[in-house]
Length: 177
Image (tube, rainbow, N blue to C red; front, side):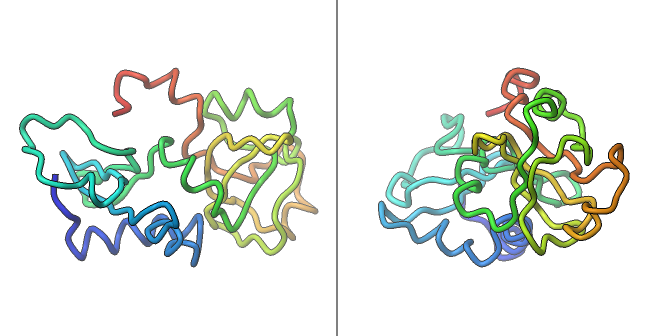
């Protein structure tokens, strides 16, 4: 387990900033301790700095919460396990109707007919956190349409592209670490 390089940190922070914006600083400097990101087997873990001490890498499976992984092309992909940390700081949010929750949790995109509310001034291709109407975070995605476009679009048009959802805990439980 090692600290991230400058390039890895930049790529990861750019991806996280799409969802939480300038609240990124609040993720690292928290009142309950100083947290850090560490890399192990191409996966990025988020944990308290003092827990990131000297542990031999060959005996370590994981330590902390897996935030995502680097692909072979050195792009960063967020995992659903990061949702609990991204949701409180989310800048742009989408709430979906109860009838569309199951479809989203099966890995489908959010249609206009399933859209309950959307944060004002959401731009197209902006990272959003998807909530149920009861304010339970369900996952995250990318806005396919801006807030203004969502008002006048066809009911069967896609408004949020699916990225990850809490249904992945069941669908991919053997690969989530």
